[in-house]
Length: 143
Image (tube, rainbow, N blue to C red; front, side, top):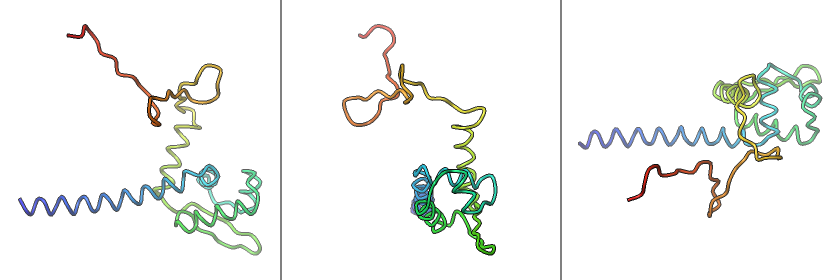
């Protein structure tokens, strides 16, 4: 019994560590400019000038976002004369970006229902601050 408890505890500690790593990656991806940069780099190595021209993110914002992504260990830089090139190096980040691309931008993109006459997804608010996405209705007669 004690051995099982200790194994579960070790497993939970490992899960917590992985959950923290996943949370850090999701926080990194939660910024739209960083997500755009990573989507751009998922296509291959690119210079800072190429990223700036391709995404329209201007200096110094681009440099700040690249530094945050680089400091997180998701991309690496290489210098060639006066140009700096970046490439995506974290396989997990590449997989998440690929999945997000398929869900939101690809041919099989899933479109959320839209509020009538709106560009925003239809989300109803309940009595609290949490969004309500579904309502459970009872079937049959109540007793």
